[in-house]
Image (cartoon, rainbow, N blue to C red; front, side, top):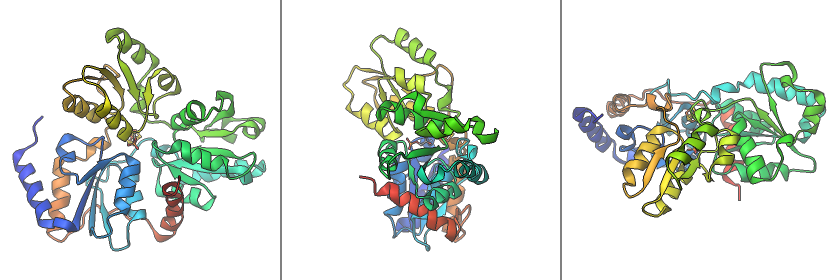
Length: 354
Ligand code: 13P
Ligand code: SF4
């Protein structure tokens, strides 16, 4: 639906009043009504870099989800304030790994004498304290656009290294198996709700990749059947998916990559080509509108937004911006100094990847 013109006018006015003091970041899954006010749009990696590169901005309004705003706070200066227009914009995948659970898993590995040879790598989609845990234990953060480089780095830390990959089992498995040549047998899934992760000591000893049992509920909806159906429906279609999709789906797809990669791939695609895109629906609809010379369709036949990304809507954005104009900072995201120190170490290791 078209945005309320009154709200649009209020957002324009508030942004103008704040000028260079304000920097608005927008993740690609944001609604159209919000993304139009972003100074920069990007995938998680690009947005983390952009946030760190704006020391002059007093206020960083993050149109995305909680873990992204936390990372922005970690990477920005003490005098910069990061604002998430709706505090309910979390990420169900990030919630699948809590600090206590990860500490418990590490204790299991320590008892087996494996902690010294394990490098914890956490996907950006995790809370600040999980990132800090990885920083403390010699690990790093990764995003969907650099997971392979992060894993390569981890395995290069020494002979017989293994990786504890948090919290998205699919990104971990897809990267290790499809991009790095590991086998499915090299991977085990650690279930935090079961003793010993539901694994035998021998399985933990043998594994190269210990994958946390987390997933994205949005990308988890795409199945092999979706890929088969769209290939029947649209002969010659190119299937382009996000690496948070299940292994069988990614194996059947033609291209896989982050949201930024998906956008770039569509930009380079020739006119007349057909694309079925397996990622969040706000982005797929926008791509379809931006490429009328190509067929761009959603990989699933049902509607599939990320409900928490969608929490950020125009009324929340206007409220956050107008509050700033009135000198009031609402919904500020702050990470405590100790967590910031260690999480920044893990994020900086990612940013320094070749
Ligand atoms: P990207 O880093 O590819 O933008 O992915 C972020 C995300 O949350 C995907 O679900
Ligand atoms: Fe989290 Fe999935 Fe939404 Fe991305 S799409 S923010 S991983 S729930």
